[in-house]
Image (cartoon, rainbow over all chains, first blue to last red; front, side, top):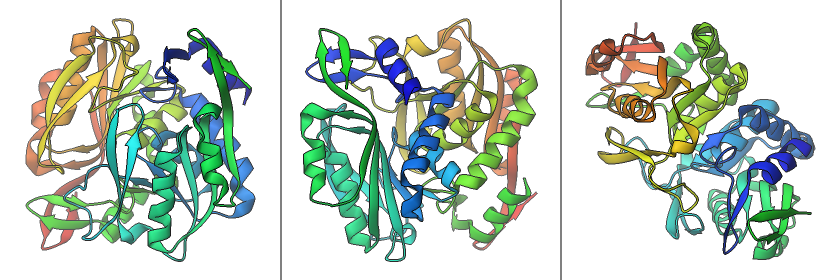
Length: 189
Length: 189
């Protein structure tokens, strides 16, 4: 993902304490062409696992998940943080710590859209501590669906997330890996 | 948008008091192919206005906005409901009433990503009372950008939103218009 590497190096910024600002192309403003390329790359890496559904978390996961869903031609479910009036009763619920909001968030999925017949690919914007991704994994376990793979746009290798996911024994792919920082500059693997 | 009409008639449901459930394809589970078709249709309708940026609100607006942005090749900005640690100081803020969450929400956009040089197309999932869209319009006004058009996937014609937008004197397009209900069935124009 040369395009992604360039955007991170040119437009990403380390704000301190491992928090990076990529809101000019990933999680506030979206670079549409980059998202399309990200979707093509995830589809290429995970297509052979024959996922039937993509699961992500609102809001920043929606764009890479949808871009991947369009290429694979499969539906995307985004876990909601608040239960809307329109959601079916007794949804699946899990709690995760949010890094960029410094608080706990609940992730909620309707049982209508995740069940034992599904082969689920998780797509999210970040793999850092893996708290959000592990909450999505638990939602999949609650539903009886099978997890087939995990994709993250950007991985922060120094926050332990990849090790936490190893026990799941599914392929984990990130499209760019940040190994550290030199002041506000980001060092990519 | 025959595909959209079919999904609304086959999978949409009136829950009472004008609230409709379309979470199997629009705002919890996303039909990726439908979203792609929605993006193509909005691009066809608004492309000649030469927008430079799309503005939407998290979370349900992100999918149709990104699908449109991919076809037009322009960035998408999604207004955030909570200010993340990574956002620049002194963002633009507006308050809107949320229909499906029965509470007030704040919409927040960084001045980094909206300014006087932008020609902005608003894309959202619903046009009902137009409260969310009018908050997005005010964010555009705060930034000094020009509003060029407004697109909604589904319009509820009986909640007054279209009339509230007429004063803006820009094209307003919705891809399916709900005129009313017969018990839990939806009546499309």
